[in-house]
Length: 406
Ligand SMILES: Cc1cc2nc3c(=O)[nH]c(=O)nc-3n(C[C@H](O)[C@H](O)[C@H](O)COP(=O)(O)OP(=O)(O)OC[C@H]3O[C@@H](n4cnc5c(N)ncnc54)[C@H](O)[C@@H]3O)c2cc1C
Image 1 (tube, helix red, strand yellow):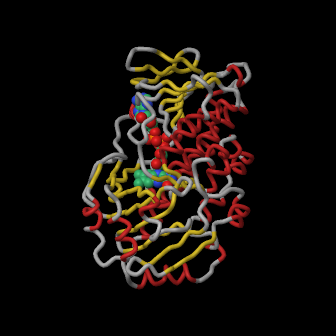
Image 2 (cartoon, protein in one colour; image 1 turned 30 degrees about the horizontal axis):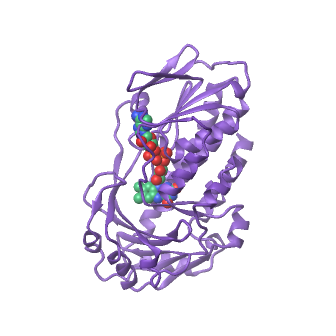
Image 3 (tube, helix red, strand yellow; image 1 turned 45 degrees about the horizontal axis):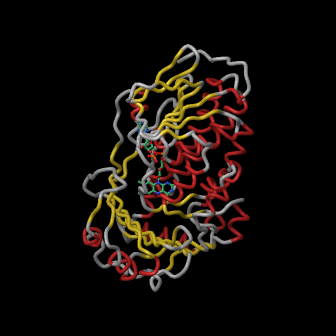
């Protein structure tokens, strides 16, 4: 661990290098720039390609995006669901219904927004300061220097800064370099994902109600994204054969249908209407003792990749980005101290979400029987803590309170 570095200047003079231009890295760069930090994002991909399917950002993240100044950009490419429903796998009977319109937005101080992931990514990239993004820049090393830290790109070019943020995703070469070799762990779940043009599914899903079918070791999801022009489908399969962690691996829709014998025809028909589906295994990362190593820190999936059962992976990267920028902005002359405060505020919450996301999967995937009946009775009970759905407590957490306290 390195001694705290005193830079004796304002954040206007602070330089940051962000390794990785995914949702976490770009949000961090925008948030840091808003604090006056001069930021460079090094992304290995030669172009911003339209990769991935759907992505939801919960109110806990959208609230922070609003503070960062990104709400209008996000709203221009995302939609707010009107309601969320949990359904029985066999016949689509409604187990729980939560309204998600203006009343939910007022309760949480922000709404959930649902996106086609490439649209969200593009909107974030367009919000970066001009010239901040360097594409085709694969980082092969990070390290400390007498004045801060540096990232070294494959071409040999070196980027010096006061801090380096490793936001290089679940496979994070930077984490491997800082913490030691240790691979992501297969969670046991494989997810099939498809996007259908709305006009091909209008009869099946005409509204903005997000629907979740709950069955034994499988759960299906269907919701409108963007401005409603696409219907997003997800099918989670537990205890699946290990597969590749991928956003682009194509599979035949019949492969997904093969897991759904006896399922609600309304969900099966949605999958039949997909030309192709993407198959990706869910991997997670073990929790760490530290995220920050002197002037270098981890952010997003590189720090805390989690199971997707609460749709919080990217939302947690947004929480990281917000706190990081607040901490650096509050102590620009003590970057190492700011990074220590960042990890103090963020690590507990991220660990809790890693655990509860895994627990949420077990609850969604119960086999029919006593436990499932007790779960469904709880959903039907009208309990106040479920008024806004099963993610209510996750969304109520306001990071700004933690910042005030920490
Ligand atoms: C099936 C599934 C569904 C999900 N749904 C949701 C959801 O609805 N809501 C939600 O909040 N989260 C969701 N998530 C999680 C979410 O997708 C991730 O948590 C989030 O994308 C992580 O963002 P990131 O910026 O940390 O990493 P990434 O998006 O992976 O970005 C990392 C970037 O770093 C770059 N990179 C890597 N190595 C280098 C290098 N050496 N040099 C330069 N660049 C490099 C990569 O090219 C990439 O662009 C889901 C995950 C899965 C698997």
